[in-house]
Image (cartoon, rainbow, N blue to C red; front, side):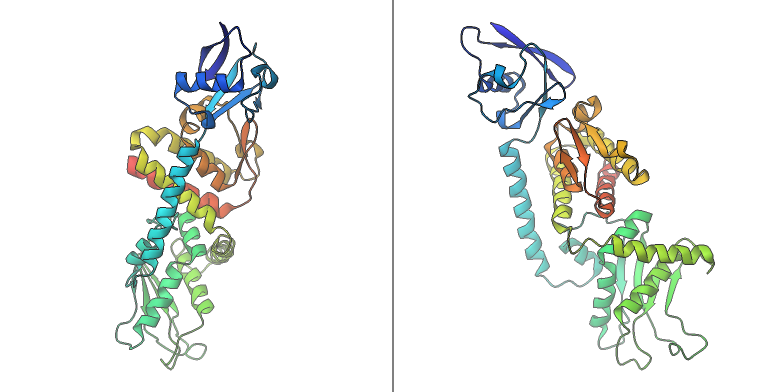
Length: 360
């Protein structure tokens, strides 16, 4: 019998192979499956910082690696696991379509209807919608408020700054815009307890332009931090508007957002909180370092051979899918963030914070 050393989860194991015949890639894969319960299609072998090409299992093992040096084994997602995740995603998409077809009567139910799309924590948002009920077109006012409350850019900004607003309400029209000396377009009560916005025109017959109302909301969100209209206030207001536009991922990031949500949901469903706690904590630290140090390349690369990463994160296929959805690329010996997408990073971190808070 001949042997080859295989490193797996920080320990080195000797794998016995047939001596009298040419050992093939398939034979090694079978021995690994028997020893570690890792299916061949989930086996990722590395040697001297390079991935071993096991695509042709009929080749002699000596053709693809040096049998005198040890191999590093990492467990990826098997075909069955990938299919399981796909089935879960398809089921969630079907559920989402059913829920979207139902009548939505308030912001909390609307949030439930979009649960398969939402990756931002439900903590950082507007929790209740209040239009003025005395008007016949109160439904239209509610629609405007809900459109603001579900604006993807606004939600991303609220998640970034950890803002939670109890109520988003319609303000009674008082005074004529641009005419009367006192004409209030918005109000922030108790720094985010309740934000009121003037929606209607002076004559009560219609509604103000949506973008104008949205700019007032930027103004009122700034009052979550600054009470006075000083230079710091206006600097924050301009920053909020800029970030709201930059972080609006509606048009191009929906698929990645769903993948992030699906991966996290799969972790919640298939593992208990204690089992995934270290993996979630390490992922949160990785993303936080990138957000805090966006220009530092060392935080954008994760070595697969890193013991913490291998032992805590890489053993969960859902965690690897989470990284790929964020924009990491699976290279030979490392994962590298190649996608410049701050919105997805904020979404990913906020989603992990939900898991961390649940485990606390």
